[in-house]
Length: 212
Image (tube, rainbow, N blue to C red; front, top):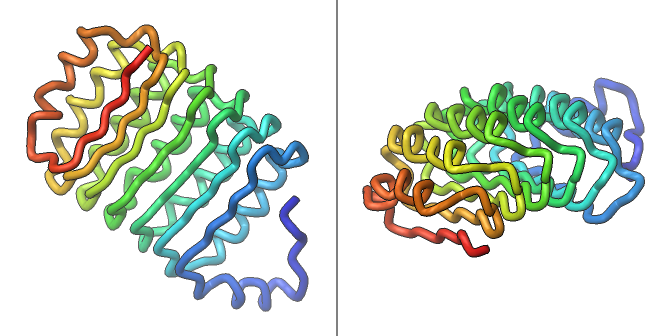
């Protein structure tokens, strides 16, 4: 569990306001739930010059779309962010609403250069949330590196996968991608064909996993 903060509100704000890097790594922490993400949200709202944010809550089964929404809402003010690494793999209660919340709140972070999402085995995710998230990325004009890990997300289909090409082609600075859609069995050769033009573009480093 994230330790409670001590000191006055002013002292706590001063302590966090100058942070440039925040990294939280909690794996298989059964007690972690949405209320803990509210604590993280408070910390993020007190920072003014954060450049790198890494949050790993892998296999925290009590985290839901509601908690992710609260967390995402605190990101939209972090205009200096250059790196985001968000790992919610095996958080089985995360679905489309959570992804939509992220998309809605990161699309104005135009200083972002490196973005990584890991939603492996978040089986409630479908095309609706995935499409919205991908569409939101088209505004990240400084993005250079993108990691999308949606392995074993069974309900992502060719339609969702195809939205990558339509939106990623807008990102002229993007030169490195890592996509993992292992065992997404509803993605077929048609889906791969739909993003082939994007893969043949100006990218310099490509990793694409689609086995299954």
